Amino acid sequence: MDKTQSHSDAELLKLAVAGDERAFVLLYERLKKSVFRYAYYMTGSRPAAEEVLQEVFIALLRQGGSYCEKQGDVGGFAFGIAKNMVRRIQRRERGYEPLLGIERIGETNVISEADSLTAQAVRNELVERVQAAIASLPDHYRQVVVLCDLCELSYTEAAARLQCSVGTIRSRLNRGHTLLARKLKPLHKSRTDLEVSGTEGCLI
Amino acid sequence: MTCRQFHERSEHVEFDPASLSPEMLYHVSVCANCKALVEERSELGMELRHVRDSAPGISASLDAAILAAFRKQTALPDASSSANRFHRRIPPVAVLSCSAALLAAAVIAALVLPIRRAGPRLVPHGTVAPIISSELQKPTRSEPAQRGFKPSRVAFRPKLYQRDHVRPPTSEAHSQLPSGFTSLMYCDQLSCAGAMEIVRVPLSRSMVALTGPTDASETVFADVLVGPDGIARGIRIAQ
Image (cartoon, rainbow over all chains, first blue to last red):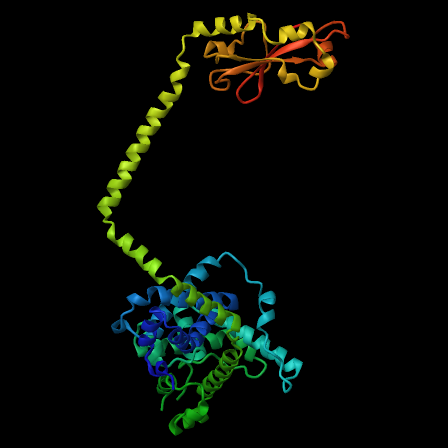
């Protein structure tokens, strides 16, 4: 077994900054999925997410020397860089309207044999609507929904990334879900016609 | 269990109705609103799972590009670090003093150079015009040629006739060309600075017709006053 496999992220970063390619590749494999997903769901664009991923790892190499383990883990350090990059891209793209039809061409899932074309189309539409609803959430709710629901981080990890308490993460997530459910209500209407949740009107 | 308690507890439950406690399940069975909340949340959970599963993968080309960026970054570590060390060594005071010195040198150069350039222009005005006239009065090399002039040879090489150097006419001399010359362009000190040359050229028939009634068979020569930029300043009919 390779020695670098047992290293922590911080040790791998040090080795990578020193020029160890194996350490860099291992660190990249560990972090790339979460960074890419976060950037993808925050920007809603694959090219932007790829740009963020590339910039994050270049920045890690350049600023890796200044990384201090006491301030947090390497994942958090990378997440901080990604967060700033996402903000920069959002500022840059603010004046443009996305051409969703064009951008989605390369992102459509490969249709499996089990899925019919109709089922796939319905699913793609559903995914697009949910993504649009997530994108319309206020930033602090969106961050939590993306980290906890889409990047599959635990509450503790999300709290460490966003530098807030676990309780804040929980309440934000709950409010984010409530808002999302409200936005997606027209989508559910065919199945159920329920009121927005709340304690008001409860008899018990 | 009240609805408020149910809502507080449901914050900790992640969309899976199976994870509800028996107490919560009982509440859901008796409260329509809370049942609706659970259904809504489980539906939302399913949709979010769909979104999560539909996330695009990272392409191999991106992996390769990032690895290439790493190799490029680590290829010249010494050069970059030495450059950083060099930058760190220079104290800010030294940078400021150097830039101040450069600025001062630039200001001095800007003040001195125009004066030195303007130096040759400070020639007494009166000396210029006589020089030009005397130069023009001298018999030129073209004059003997004119006596035994062979038009067929000359027509192809007009500049071989005459190139008399004239000292640069300055100030007033610029605005008023030497006597006998007709101005072809506006001339002042700025636009017509530098030495001018007189070039004798044979004129075309059309040009002869423009200058007045002349015998068409006669060859007419003209002195053209040419500036250092190659643009004709003035012209006069020589013969």
